[in-house]
Image (cartoon, rainbow, N blue to C red; front, side, top):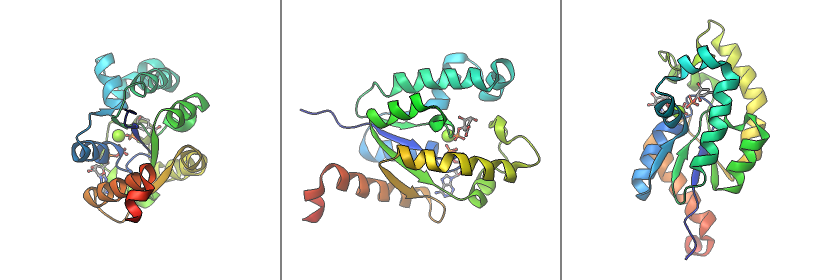
Length: 180
Ligand SMILES: Nc1ncnc2c1ncn2[C@@H]1O[C@H](COP(=O)(O)OP(=O)(O)O)[C@@H](O)[C@H]1O
Ligand SMILES: O=C(O)C1=C[C@@H](OP(=O)(O)O)[C@@H](O)[C@H](O)C1
Ligand SMILES: [Mg+2]
């Protein structure tokens, strides 16, 4: 029997990858892995510490290693970090080893959802909105080029997003069932 494809969530900070990934995995009775969480557990340090000590490149190296490991599992749900698509190597790994779902949101929603956050080093600066807009310009095309499907998360809550993903993934995997 063919293994179930991995479901891999990509998208910007605050799109809801970690939140929706956990709910989606529970809904489908699959195991859930959050790349950032796994990196922190392995290092015994949080992401700001890794950025401070090893720089962003050090964090990205750890991220590439972790994505390689997690995507070798079968039938799991994986939440990536927002920068996972920056490296071509990562994009190839994600595309080849699962169904990739782009959680789209707007900069306005990102600002609201990350307003009190202290764990995202790239946002700990006063010109946060400009940083997010710049990132959107660079990363949105990369998310689109990597994803099999795009799901909006800006105008509805996590539960509705999960239901939409389940419906769309079912259609992708089994188009005949959906027509019935
Ligand atoms: N669809 C949504 N609607 C409203 N709030 C959301 C939604 N998705 C996530 N959130 C909230 O936004 C914040 C960031 O979500 P998170 O899952 O950490 O995003 P990501 O992992 O993509 O950076 C959390 O406080 C979460 O509860
Ligand atoms: O967008 C990024 O470059 C990052 C996103 C973060 O994950 P979330 O997207 O889950 O916040 C985390 O990986 C790190 O702070 C870098
Ligand atoms: Mg996250």
